[in-house]
Every structure is written in C-alpha cells, then in structure tokens.
Image: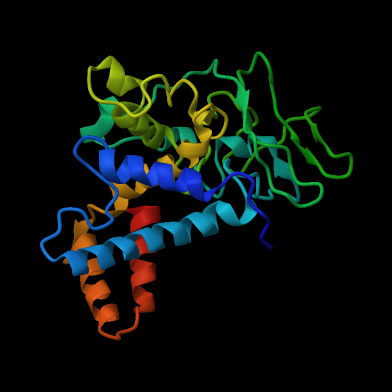
Length: 282
C-alpha cells in the first residue's frame, strides 16, 4: 500500500540534487552527466543513475512517507522496543568503519536520548524507535498492540538479546534508510558534509549539523526537507557510483546501458540485482 507523501516533495528533491551534483563534497558529486566527453551518452547515463536512485528511494522510504526506520521484526510474537538497536540479525551500533576510515565513525555515547519521528502508518503500528540510557529505561519491553502502548514491566529482548536501548541511536534514516544506518554511515556524513568538516576547516554543506551527536537531524531538524534526500544521495555517491570490482565498473556500466537503450535496447533486469548487491552489501 502506498500513501500520499507529506515529507518528500519535488522542490526539496531538486534543491538537494543541486547541492549534491553542483557543489558536492570532497571532490565528489552525484552523477547526472557532468564532465562529459560524449554529452549525449553521459547525460543519458546520468538520467539512468538518477532513475535508479529514485527507484530505491521509492521502495525504501517514499512509498510509506517515512524518514526513520520502522519497528518491523517480530520476535516471539511481539515487536521488541529494543529493535531500535538492530533488526534481522544486525546490531547497528556495531556497523563500524573499516581500518582506513576508522577516524570517521561516530563515537558511542550511552547518554544520547531521543526518539524517531516516523513509524509505520498501519493501524496499531509500534511506536517510533527511541534510544536512551539505562538510567532512563533500565530494561525495555515490547509493543502491546492491544493496549496500544509500550509494555516495559518485564524485559523483552530483540533477536540479538538486547533488553535496553542505551547507545541504540543508529537506526536507518532518509530516503535510503535501509542502508543509511550505523555509526560509520553517520560518522562519514559528519566528516564530509557536517560539523566535523567545518571544525577541521574543510568545506561543509551543513556546518552546524552534528550527525554523530544527533543523527535524527536527518528527520527532525530545520534542514530535514533536504537531508532526507541528501543523506541518501551521499550514500549513493560514496558506495554505488565509485564501485569498480571484479570487472564491474558502475559508471561505465550505466553509460553502456544508456547507449544500448538509446538505440532501442532493453534494460537487463540482472543489472538491478547488481546494483541491489552494491547498495546493500558493498
């Protein structure tokens, strides 16, 4: 089921695209055909790149007008409140950077406390995710859909055994909320386009936004209309566009496909599987 979107608007998308394709960060830009040797090929490839990004944006967030990741994993018949810490076998605070980017990841702060702003739109859906220290929630329970409230009277664990939400502020956010999550993703945003860049004396699109201190800025700040889009474009620029492994060069591939389409060819569905793997697993 799809819903009318109140969060995702064309004007915000266009402003975000302007920022990420014209200005960019660290010499990187969202590819829409810039730097052309063959203008027609590159523009077509740029439009294909944009169409792929919008396809994933629609699937991951726009179709249910969401910014924050939702509580969706049922454990022993219930939705654990501690799913905020991670769902489907993942621990979000442990999604960290590799050694080469270790200095960019967000530190773990057990005192962070805030809530998500969106939840699923169906009747009796669980409350938005939250994170808070154990001094505030010694243990966390589950969503009681009969009483339409959270029940914290007894501890109820998520799949990985968490019965608290301390340090669990790293759930997914933005148009690519299924991949924009974890301390590494938010840390890199802070390093390249947030407060860390400004503090280091480097250009920053959002010099006053600390994505480590308040990752919920993507969904609940004065810049949210842009950041819902920008966060996803950032992820796309960092992970998808530069992909070049095992003989698969993403940018060259979309140029090849764009040329084929312009000559009446069809888009091979296997390409979507390739992009899906790049985006979700690297």
